[in-house]
Image (tube, rainbow, N blue to C red; front, top):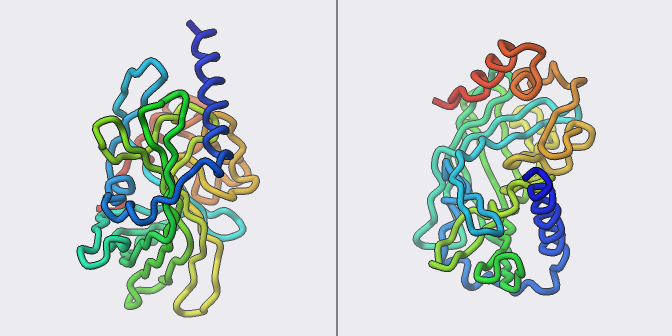
Length: 258
């Protein structure tokens, strides 16, 4: 059984890299993407994981993980709502909250689709279509509050279209090493000082996270960043006792944005 799981994982991994690097087989999908709603990929609280035997598993979608600054201070972001602009279907209005240390701030802004592609010649899932949307992100925290600023950058959103023409989160390669989605790379800039800091986040992995992420199969922060907001995340993964692990998991499940 374990041997079969390893073989399946390797096959998924090979297929994943084939999908990732065979960009020449992707078709432009920009004109069509406006007819689909990418907000559900960002805000849905669950994802559907499938394997080659067509078995499906519905899982709770984890909150995005992120960092801010060169010292990889943990950065939290939660999307409360993302709504497609009826007058410009490439634009989405976003509202949510950010958290750094114990400072929680609301933000609002836009996600604008700039490019989109599609691929439909996958051997492992021949009846599915896969694609990525590249989006411009502009989020603004409340200027009336202290320790606030604006977030600008680029977000890459992975989607699929299944046999029933459902447009959904691409989690088919969920069990492969390095799986991620909704990857954002950008900066946070202080209103007060105009100083910018690197600010990246994503689902399950953080892009360009340097030596913060030492995990192989999944995101795992280096213990040297324990005091940079990663304490409970680390405890949830490898607490020294069951009590430590339970404390970490409970803390990670807190709905801090409410």
